Image 1 (cartoon, rainbow, N blue to C red):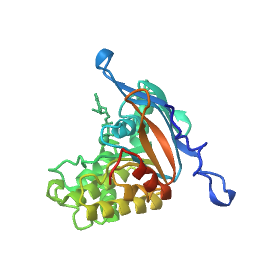
Image 2 (image 1 turned 120 degrees about the horizontal axis):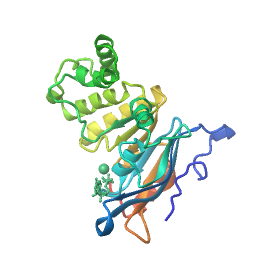
Image 3 (image 1 turned 90 degrees about the vertical axis):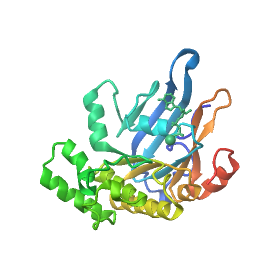
Image 4 (image 1 turned 180 degrees about the horizontal axis):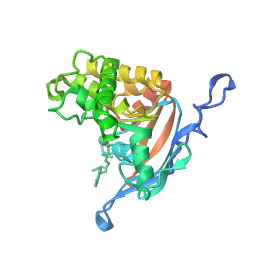
Length: 270
Ligand SMILES: Nc1ncnc2c1ncn2[C@@H]1O[C@H](COP(=O)(O)OP(=O)(O)O)[C@@H](O)[C@H]1O
Ligand SMILES: [Mg+2]
């Protein structure tokens, strides 16, 4: 099954009053991912196409094992597709040019993991400063910027706490600050609220939504939570192929219709 997720050609992306659409910032064309080889090979993505327009907040909802993480890893250039390509601002992320990939990973895109992946023995400030230090920025300015970002996510009173001493919700806020401290254009979030209770999940989602707007991000968020997904501008689902076990991307309509569509599909529950 081929994908219908190219937002340039589907209903639901037209702007009101005939305003021009924002440019496509991140695009995947014909993404295919096969793990392993021979009789042990597993086709996860068959032909995934998607376009994220600047400023969009898009959810991707699919059952566990459908390939959400695989897709996000390919979009972030953390893994290579078997075939197909990812484009950032219309330029291919050439997986054979290490400098382009490194530049893309370091500057253009940020990844937010379900499990925050913080360094437990380092303070919140040190964790947030880490991407800046790895970039070669000075220690003092990096720590100052990190503290500003911790204040931005509501943790100005936790700057010197070790990450391991923080609650799950606080840890995910630190992870958000660490993801955004480099001022990426695109945020890819892999079930960022998946480990949190309902109240914290909403708080973290609302924080993401506020930062998305404030910093003019383009965000793609994998989630199991239909209520959160329905708050996004668009919802993508990964649907099971008719002929093989792989999943393809499907663009659902405006997010207001997403919950109805998703309830009909067998794949997801809140
Ligand atoms: N590195 C890998 N090697 C082999 N199979 C993998 C690998 N990573 C993921 N898979 C398989 O690919 C499928 C999709 O996984 P994943 O992208 O993690 O799905 P999701 O994030 O939607 O739960 C699963 O069946 C998983 O077991
Ligand atoms: Mg996953």
